[in-house]
Image (cartoon, rainbow, N blue to C red):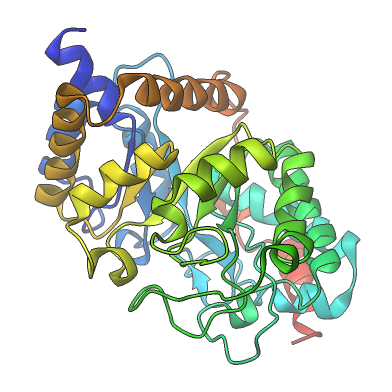
Amino acid sequence: MSPRALRHSIGQLLMAGFPGTSLSVELRALAREFSLGGVVYFARNVEEPAQVAELSRQIVELTDDDLPPWVSVDQEGGRVARFKRGFTLWPPMSTLGRSGDVDLARRFARALAAELHAVGVTLDFAPVLDIFTNPDNTVIGDRALAARAGEVATLGTAIIDELQRAGIAACGKHFPGHGDTLADSHHDLPVVEHEPERLRAVEFEPFRAAIAAGVASLMTCHVRVPAFDEHNPGTLSPRVVRGLLREELGFDGLVFTDDMEMRAIAGRMPVPDACVAAVAAGCDAVLVCSGNHDLQGATLEALIRAVESGALPYARVDEALARQRRVRRRFLAEPRPAAGPLAEVLASDAHLAVAAEMARFA
């Protein structure tokens, strides 16, 4: 493989955040040199809906690949919603659990998908499939659908089904489970001490259901689970990603890391080295989200050096690229129908009525 072809292949492994409300010169340069797997929106990138829609159009044109990069966002509802002004403000997902209403969950997901489609988003890092089994867990808290595995599985698969019927790739998170933690992985490395039997019976149930429902992607968590790996957080653990997620649960969709700049990872090793370890463990794409383009470039260079040295077998990269192409083809190969005027879609009366119905269970 030529050096240029290798660089463009490796670029597909990166999901990049960026600063500001327009595409930076540095991000455009990265996309030209490496290609990119996709771009991740944060609140800092958003002024108003029309500006987001134009940004999405430009992101799709960043690369000359036959399949465009992902345009992605964390749009869960409640505390984790990057799109606010001009969009429907969704209550937290715990309201759906308290409602016990699967039809309401479906109507929510259809409305959410319509608003994401209207501004050009193709991948939503949602729903949360963690189970709120620990009331002291503030990082998950009301982001979780429910405190019982079966309820999370039922509601989560309903949301996945409706998002994906509408052409939005869903991403269930955070495997192998962030629901029973105390530490926040944004700041420290949480540990889940349960025995394997409990984890398989409880934490895994929503992920097993999502896989059966055809979820496009899952996200790992930066949580150490000694029952499966005494040393590595899930994101960096071949036992977790390959052994459990791929081999035991049979998942063959995309595996994304959580943001590799979170302190659970970045506080213990350099981000570029961690990204190499994550891909080696079986992840198909790494998220480097702060918008530090020097760090993103260093991550891609580290991945290239690892392949060239043999530390990261190209067969592992090729596997990730094949999986990416398969999932992108499923969602991005055909032009999607126009969404209609933004004012008729975003925060429409019908969507606001769904949000109000959810809010009754707050």
